[in-house]
Image: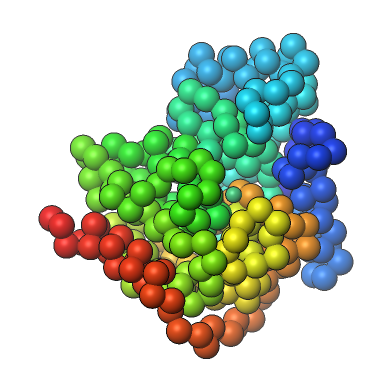
Length: 334
Ligand SMILES: [Zn+2]
């Protein structure tokens, strides 16, 4: 894969006890360099106009001033330092780079992966929250729409990407699908929310029960996500790739193995090939340093030809019920 990364993203210093710290990127870089000799591309930062295509300009100015004034606690979870402004523009810029690389034909061994922070998927149109300032994947999707007609975003971070959903909820040109742990922060993303107005049936929420494992996740792909994308027929597939659903992640109760992140990647590859939609990955959360870097390395290996093992367990009843319900909301209640 081609990895986009910028050192400035390390300088967004959230303090020693914050789970979303620069060591996350250091762990990923170390593992990729050591295991595969990966070299990193340093894309340009996004400019303010590109950010303002999805965020209110007033809010963007507020972030700039907040950082210039020294930063501090934006809210209980979301922290800024003066460098956060540049890190946030860089993080969004790397995501835009990834989308453009994919649209320029980078695929297979060259599939782009944006390794930036702060993460993005909780950031709403006019506010930061949940460690996120600018919604990187949304900025990338919006920029890509200058070149193509439809973007699908698949968000497998363990938290619901409320920001991404909100930004595109009434839009028919972006399909947002999320697999998340029911009841976890920020508490949004019920199965009944499927979009409105021009965006009707272009939002898919899979709030899976705590403890869901590989079999449930892959069943959700096969039974719901793939048919939903088939109907939408995207021109680009962006993956909001968080690794906090990993069985060794400290902040969720999900039980997704490293191998299953590979199996999900294989499914993204086949969606991409079937619908002729180039594929790019954008980092979101993931708070166990080892499980995070293992997950990113697994995705890289899949693009180097590894065939991940399929789970051999049964799909748990409660998980299956959520997938059935989501499928019904999207396809059968018309
Ligand atoms: Zn998360």
